[in-house]
Length: 474
Length: 102
Image (cartoon, rainbow over all chains, first blue to last red; front, side, top):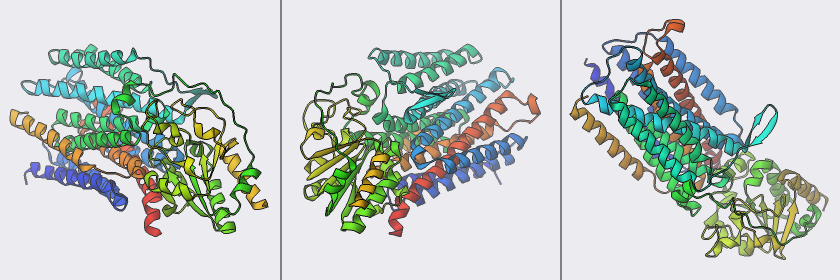
């Protein structure tokens, strides 16, 4: 049988990826979509090994192949099994960086064979195609690696060096934007120059170094709330890197799967931007709030847990609005306990209002609350829950700020036009927060100063625990 | 690579990009992270390229550098693939799984 028939396996693999991505977009079919993706990957790997074994050279040595697959699978599996649900966003960013690095390393390995290992460099049409593809794969791949690593540490909030906690910086003056452009075009220029001088290693190292720096300066100015968008964009880029790698080795499944991920990742990035009422350009090139934080001129007296418990006594309907503060203090279990207490004591109806960008990743709140066994039906998306605030006795906001700020309804300011959760329509509003400080957008929140708002200052976990004790003692 | 093969590859590339744009339309926000992580696992497909590169004679420390680079690429790509699918699976069990049981 002709070996080239084996490559039909790549077609099956590509089809499985397409079905997989399609199904991942719907809640009911998502688990199946993930399985399709796994099958597609297994088919691709088996096809590749078969193609090599039956090809002209056969498999020269199994050692690196088997060792690589086993080591990578084991590490990946252990990392995925050990990670806490709250650490999920960082993990996705890290995996993404590895994917980008893998594509870039394949490009480097290919170049290495021409430069040092005496393989005949490509000639004719192959020459520009392979050099350009390898250069672009390196550009996107290394950029994805450094960008994703920085994104991971930004999501973590900092890094521990010799026992000292160092906060990840967010820094992006306007003059950094032209620098990004210069770096990008200098890589393109270097790729063009290297076509005529394929064995010159200076070009190779310069492309790698500049691409790494580009990844860092691209992510450096971007702050917390925009991080998911950037991780999604980097995910799209790692797909594109894989597609370019496909051009180097002339492999169809790499091209198809890579560009599928690149395109669908980009669409997902746009969907996420839209949920925040931001454009991709704003996310990448305009630092969000941050630099010009509003000074606080007003104060508000805080309340204690007993007062909140008294207000909550006998409530018929309470809507809980979780935000990043819940993720930080890990208080989802206390929140669930509160809900159970209220339901068993007063038959209170409890619902959770989920803002599309609450937390550090879309779906962050869903995952945390699901971990605490909150029933799925109680989690309600923003558009659905907003009309219900008018007849709710109490809204409890846990560590959320910008997503509840009525200033977003106006026409001016950094928040203008962002969809918000209408907590201010509730009869009483309880806000659990460390201080009155501004949120990520740097805008003061009028909601805090309203008469019906009770500020419960403190750590989310401690305050929820106090509240639960107070309710038990009522 | 003949011009026919090159133009064929470019055709695949462009069509797959169009398909990717059409594939994702409305996604509920709670699925954004699992979708991203699942797509991310698929981008580990570069393992295929790494496998070809790692098919060199193994000779301990004297193994061709290109083979070592490809080996590292296999490890990183497999972490991406296995870790990515496993993490997605865990997230989906929490989000989508709850709905079915209820």
